[in-house]
Image (cartoon, rainbow, N blue to C red):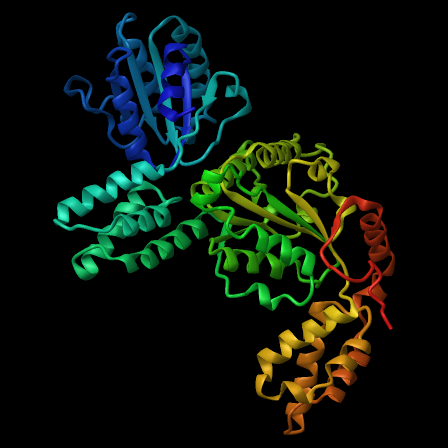
Length: 501
């Protein structure tokens, strides 16, 4: 349901207090005014802020200035039969005041029989518990692709330019996820730079997008250079990904294919789960957003749920994209809803409901080291397209991992390394541990003013105790979980026990 339609329904149903969390104050006010003058009947719109009081109507100009309680009393000055919308900017700052809260509850009673509504516009949700029953939250979405296209077309026409449809489509796609004000700002910057809009202005837009995402402090815009070929082994997983490489295209929509939903990569630390997330984004040419689940939780009542909704809204506005949730098991492990007023339960419920019901092309890649710590609801079919188990690399996969790292570091000298012996002599080592032993070998060679050799790598391996030995019980539980058929093996050959001699 669109914002305009839902807002109109709330007005017609005489909801007394509507709370709209958004940073796009100007845009939402324009939408409210347009709705007030719509086909369903004309309503007067009064706008108040703390500095200037009420604005627009000369008779009431300045009323309620620096007085939030008086701003509410203004409602009672209006004729009972009058239809009106009272917009209160940043009014969330005053909701904790006892007099303001009491006045709002009193007004909520009387406004049920009148054609008036109070609309609070604030950058985030901050609703005290005692007002939760009288306030209705209405989300205001970021600009749609069609709204962005209208804005770009307007700018292009004003410049007397003509751009190819392909270029406009690229600009529209790159602008998705930004507020209309930020879109206008970055496009104005592009025009100021070289006097017109150009195809390479997409890079400016992406930089603005990185700034926006950083400011949310919830998601990170992650640059990717890793390729599928940088992953040693994991052939089943790579085949699965390559098969779905074109699934976000328009041709796939015309074919009737639904958007891929996502992957849960469970397994042992250091086996390439995070690397896979980065490689997917690079291979599919999609932006990679990284979510730290811990950032969703905040101290104020209602703020955690607001952050979760904001994260979902931002990810969907940037779609198609990859949403990478690293170590999801740590974020949602073992909560029981006690001690935090059920905040963790509500955040988790919102998140998994979105996972199951989302229709937007947001491909979720979640990684987990301790699968037993995840709530069982997370593993239910429908949340992810597939659950893959990423175990310790087999001997053949270890050889491939050595090739990846040594080809990057010593491409000219790769044949001098005994790859078969290195793979054979390093059972139970993960990909991350193999990389570390090569770095140690490089330090050894560098300290002696020579290049590092196969013997140096094996010497480093002898000094390194793999996680497979220090966390043997945890890894055994993971392997038993995967062997029970609860996940698909990411590796094509080899068993869940990686020791192949």
